[in-house]
Amino acid sequence: EDQVTQSPEALRLQEGESSSLNCSYTVSGLRGLFWYRQDPGKGPEFLFTLYSAGEEKEKERLKATLTKKESFLHITAPKPEDSATYLCAVQDSGSARQLTFGSGTQLTVLP
Amino acid sequence: DVKVTQSSRYLVKRTGEKVFLECVQDMDHENMFWYRQDPGLGLRLIYFSYDVKMKEKGDIPEGYSVSREKKERFSLILESASTNQTSMYLCASRRRLEGLSPLHFGNGTRLTVT
Image (tube, rainbow over all chains, first blue to last red; front, side, top):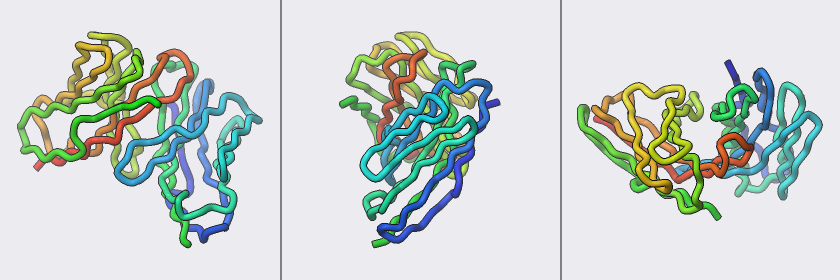
């Protein structure tokens, strides 16, 4: 059974204080790993797809990386508008129809 | 941009009522999904559909049914609502089922069953 674990559950940062969110996963074969951002009262918004170990993708202050067992979402010099819940999901090669989601990391960036 | 629209943001229903949650997408996606989101449990798949009139059970289909009569519309039905179905319900669509295109989500329906 696929498993996705995100840590920490919650993270509070001062504006400008860089940090990383972790997504560790167990799958029989990884087809892809997705990162989403979810604001309160809204649906998740797609950020990145990573396909293979060693791959990196960037968008503004966010950079996602992937290894064979985990993915990191690095946040450089965050701003208050980066406050949100960040979700990770995996697509298993043996279960092409479904994504397995983690429970998310709730990030708060204080001004 | 893909737009996935859920008909209600908030719903309050009584135990035993039949509840309909409606979702419409405007990008001609073949695949549509219903998830529920609960604190600490993440998103869990209830049902999905890969074509009109086609459906498959997800991880937690008990107590739910779905309908897809038109490509753009996917409905979730709670046959007899119970308090343990109080949750945030998210609809999503996707361009290709077997590919790696991302899910596009609606803004959710927060359902309270009293």
